[in-house]
Image 1 (cartoon, rainbow, N blue to C red):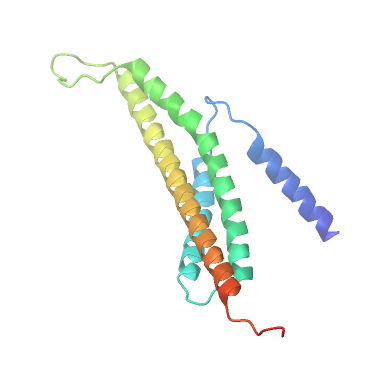
Image 2: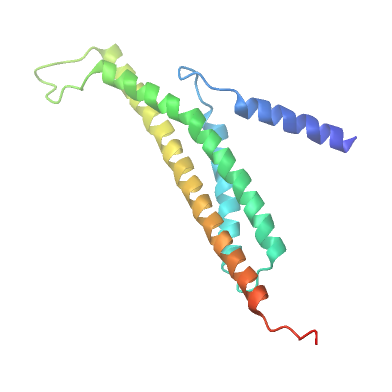
Length: 166
């Protein structure tokens, strides 16, 4: 019964994550922040564990699997946020450059409010995008480090002294 419940939740999660987002739709920044914080904690935990001197092959495989899942989720987040960032930046560009000298040209209040709103939204989503991209890059670097450690373990096993069968 628990397996069925788990599988149902897993399917719902995959459907929710894999649905493309229209650039005009609002992105739930708080939910994405929480996802990014979870991924950052996971990546930091694995990074600290990799600095330990004695890591066996099984733990490295677990870490690799976890990092691959994290990297995939982070790439999905980037895919979701990127069109929203592009859209908000395009909306700001449509408003044009804000007048630098306020004494000669005064913008209407509704344009000032819209510009401030779009700037705030753009900065927030752009920050999330950069954080997701940075975490994805860090996960990729850790995956490369795990590959290197596994290769070293393999070579150590391969060249360790063996007793002669004769």
